[in-house]
Image (cartoon, rainbow over all chains, first blue to last red; front, side, top):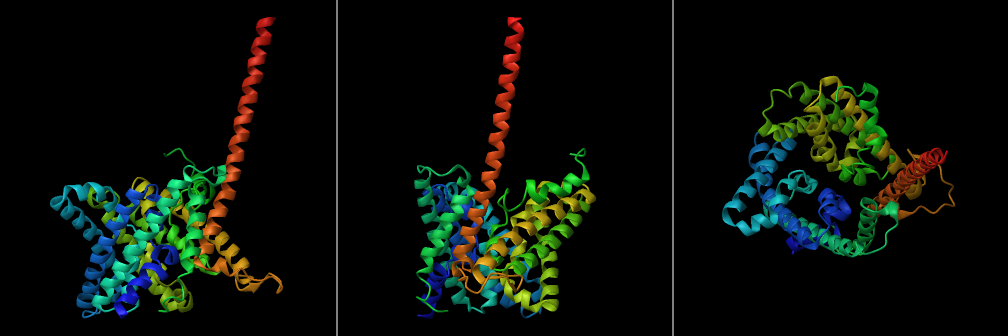
Length: 192
Length: 224
């Protein structure tokens, strides 16, 4: 029950993009088409889950026992950067179609705030190993949901008559604001 | 590159190439911490510190770093300075550090910083890199301060903790919620864009009138 709560809290109520502002760059950058947005969401979810596992292990198995907490940021970002590289090589070897679909998005994920944010939140909130995995999965699903909805709206926006100064980033931000308001309707659903 | 004046090296980041309004980089901290003006200032100062020192360090050792591992080295250097900022803030300003929460460590993945290292400090001398970093930091500070002030005034009736709106003004709760951040920045960018568009139209109009003038001059001359 606790795990399901963590999952839905991260995916919907406290959506990573719309209420923590994590992963805004790809959210604005790669949300032009539904298909690419969905691939980006899947790739990010995949990396998020692996990151939650690896960073939990590093923090609790290496940094805590040796009192090296001050190395937290340096080690996390290094692990995430190499992890993304590793995942990229692994997917390239295992499945070419998946690599072609995700390939260009994978390097971008390194500088996605959502990944480091997730690792930091897991430490900050003192999640257990299993809770961390569910948190990562929920965050990924929430990110995929938000970016896919956004891409759907933007495909329609292309046909709309937008005032000249609003074209590009401004209208995207305003749509995101309205989306955030819609997601606010979920608040109070789970109190955590 | 070398013939750009030093003042321009600083000032280009402040307004013309403003990291937020023009380059649209570093959105996460911009939107997340600007609930109040003071948070925005603290965030911008912390980011500027990291940007300045990593720019200086990276431009000093730019010839030693092998090209293949440069991104990883940049990130490591940035993460080191972020750790310093985080520890200092925890010790000296515990309240601010708590208010900014995980967004201080998230400076590591702020695209502005990595972007400047890749685009500027890895190719330029120490002094120019420092000026460029300071300029970008100032631009970031201006953007965060404007955004934070608007949200604080409308959302909590105060600016930097002092009440400036009358009591009869009902605070707009939406402004201090996440949705308010998106809406404020979107409207602000559109407002700034409208200026840029107007300027462009004026330039175009003057160009066309100049062209017509010279054309009529030429035809007049031919008639003579």
